[in-house]
Amino acid sequence: MSSVAEKLQRKAPKPVSGKQVRLKLVYIDFWSAVKLAFLISVAGGVVLIVATFLIWNILALTGVFGSISDLLRDILGQENFNVTDVVSLPQVLLFSIIVAALNVVVGTALGAVIAMLYNFSVRITGGLLVGFTNN
Image (cartoon, rainbow, N blue to C red; front, top):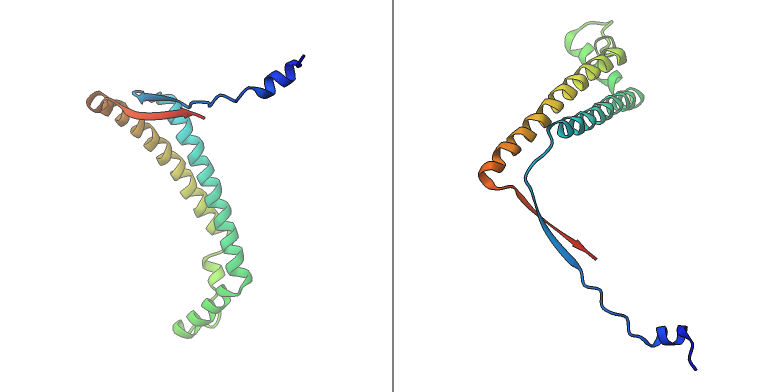
């Protein structure tokens, strides 16, 4: 007599067919789109502030500001001119924070407008056809 394990081993595996589903995206929830746009905008703002800080530090450490100061001293003829007085780290970071805050506001509003425009355009186009497979 053969065991159950031997019977199962003799059976050929059945090919698994992939199931395909085609769906239409006919509505985007307005508040979900606004929340997602806000989160993406906040993440972009944080990236902007950190990148500004890192780039300013790299420029300061490599002596770019000193070279620009020397060049502008020669051009302007002023002995006590320093670029870092005009473009200091706190000033640059404050400007970066202001730009990031504006990006959050504009990005959130843009996400809301895009969701509304898509929902209005679905009435004309019928929606976006998306295909999914199960492998």
